[in-house]
Amino acid sequence: MAMFDLTGRVALVTGGSRGLGREDALALARAGCDVVVADLLIESDPNLQEVAAASGSVMAQVMAADRVVYTERTAAEIAQMGRRSKAVQMDVTDFQQAREAIDQVVAEFGHLDILVNNAGCHDHVGQLMDQSPELWDRDLKVNLTGAYNCSQAVWPHMRAQNYGRLIFMSSITGVGGGFGQASSATTSAGILGLMRSLALEGARHGITSNAVVAGIIATESFRTTPPEMVDRMVLRTALRAPGQPADVAAAVCYLVSQEAGYVTGVELPVAGGIDLFTF
Ligand SMILES: NC(=O)c1ccc[n+]([C@@H]2O[C@H](COP(=O)([O-])OP(=O)(O)OC[C@H]3O[C@@H](n4cnc5c(N)ncnc54)[C@H](O)[C@@H]3O)[C@@H](O)[C@H]2O)c1
Image 1 (cartoon, rainbow, N blue to C red):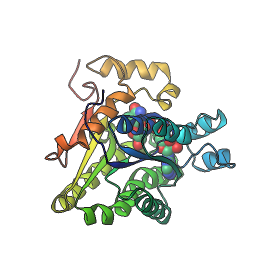
Image 2 (cartoon, helix red, strand yellow):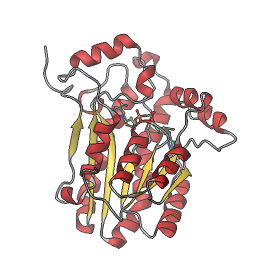
Image 3 (cartoon, protein in one colour):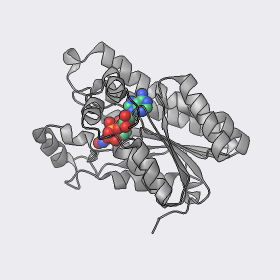
Image 4 (cartoon, rainbow, N blue to C red):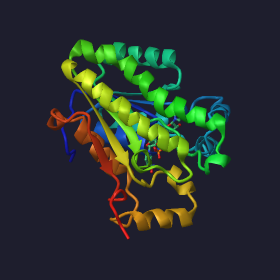
């Protein structure tokens, strides 16, 4: 049984081909939403591997090579639940593309109520002198500018209907820093400033804006993390285990629900207590 009733709402989830985005999309659909699943990678793209390689993302390349990209499959699973759904190929770094895709969703679905800014890259790992300026730029563009682009593209529609729910995906590294993760930690911190600003600006238009601050969550991309690094992170986590994508999806469903109507500008940690002092 779904925890919250989102019947009649329309959601768009970016980065929905796998991991947290796919789980968010499925959970929103179970709660009653029609869901558009957007991603740079889409199974039927004849240039899937080239697009993945151009993104610079190690994970994207691994997934494309293994054909483990589930954008269209996720949309089909949602349609099987009796909801309206659609897979959309969209590069969040391209404002024009984001705006056209979002305008098209509004034209087809009638409205767009929920935007989950989930697309992101967190595979640029290495201490400062081993980091690459190109991947730093990519991370700023995808993780920060991407969320900005999609939020700006949905804003006029949400304002016109005097209702909207924005979700931003941040990370515990954005709060505490991340050893060997300068670019993703920086963007995770930056996203919180964007989230809070839009909470302030959206409040008078019925738009709430909140962030999930994730700890270590066992998505597909997590499986490529070296086991000794996983062990260290789990030991630092009060609950002594990685979280599951469903833990994040439950938080997303709450934050976009009617019940969270008075909640805005919030950073909700789904982190098993990794942020707590431990010794
Ligand atoms: N998994 C974790 O432990 C964790 C922890 C904290 C924060 N996060 C954040 O949550 C989000 C999802 O994490 P995940 O583990 O599922 O990541 P992931 O790498 O498995 O999935 C990210 C998705 O974003 C898509 N994407 C990348 N660039 C894009 C672009 N330019 N346009 C559109 N889509 C693009 C990818 O194709 C992929 O489907 C990310 O923003 C990540 O930074 C994850």
